[in-house]
Image (cartoon, rainbow, N blue to C red; front, side, top):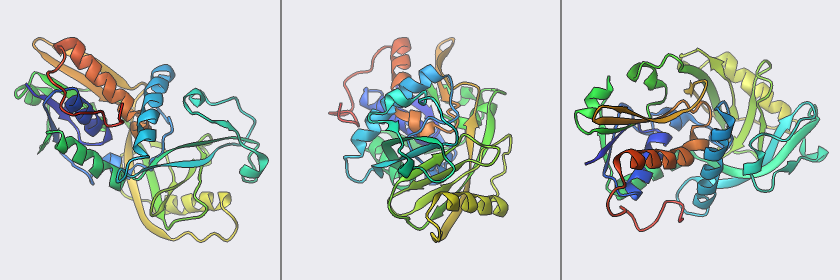
Length: 330
């Protein structure tokens, strides 16, 4: 009996892959497929941002970091390790997630742009989503997963096809399962021509002035960003783009030319806490996996493995594994 996974962003695809590797037949149902999902807009760098509670998020993020680090050694995944600095304007304690990152240290004064009193230097995976999501989709299909493009208005529609459902619908869960705690956190990003040398710079602690990040990818560089709670508009804002460019320019060497290639908007699924739990309705089961805020990629593999564990606990283990090895080789 197959598992129906709702949603084809990074969470749905990661769950689909792990479930197939555990031996469960899987079918993904989604209204939108890559390259038209929220995940396609993600910057994306391993960094636990706007996701709670910290203890659970830290565990999921640490596991995902291990998997992404392994994928950085594999060709065609779109994942690579990049060094950079998380900038802080005032002296600060070590970040709460710092224990998950090998080699994290205080940034030297030479590594910090003017105006920053502190910072943390480390290297983590940066994911080029236009390559990573097709790779994930290819992995899912190679394992025997099926894909159906369809919108779902209620869990009963999925339960009519299978008693086992995994809900990875992101912001869509607000209507699907009547969860009013979900809210959009609008984010705008610009892609510019590559900048050198390739290192990331992050400053997300002063959203009143505007968060700033510079994230180099394989063939471009992502500049951000915004975090507008409650704003569900997907229309790019020219004023926001100018502000992003101005903030990025302050962190770059004087005279750096910024050649904009595209301007995109995505809606992060904000929630007071990530919802990752199993919920039984008579003979039917749904495992919820949504509300990851700005950390969908950062939590993806850790959450996917917990989804498999929850499903196995409720319905029993699957049959023979669907693959000869895990995606991360472990």
